[in-house]
Length: 258
Image 1: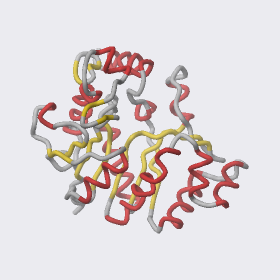
Image 2: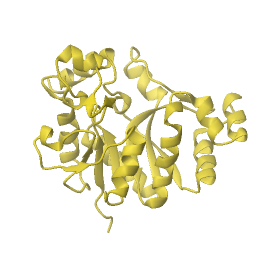
Image 3: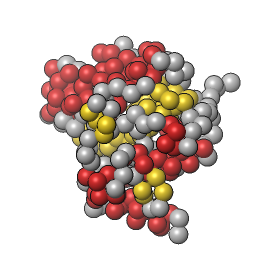
């Protein structure tokens, strides 16, 4: 029987001495914490919690990093936060967050139970220690041609992250530790590839590296069984990161909820 999957929601933001630094979205909305940003009438994180609550296979209570859980109404486990999302995941695991666990973010306001369940099913069936949710440009661009996303361009596909991660065990946490070391390069594919070796870098810059090949190489290099999980939802790759994202997300939610 497959054990239920624990959940970590990353809800932190850049801060100094425990106080959040000014954020354009927060300043405009008159809120202190991005996780509480009003989106189509309710706090952004409420959409994430609602999607998780209606997904099967998850273990409650969920864990939250970077925000006092009392601000979300309680009923959640407080997880320690650190300098950056990857570090916060590592801190959570070391503080007792049980394996296996799913990681998502507070700004994933378009998250749905279908996204969660399809990602989780794919991750579990893959047998991976670590799995990463991705959506293809061919799925995202036709649905939302106006949205600007960061794509990793491979020989066979161009993909964007979906803020969904699966960590099965301690071995899978090694992929998060690599992310922690490389997080400053997450939007710089060439620098990211360079961290995994010159062979992978050369294949990437010459357009010969496939998505599957990248994960095979990364798995061998990190001694981790890592797999990509492609999701058939354009909305899975859209989060609330800037004012234009907020406008788009509110438009989508208005249509979704009539």
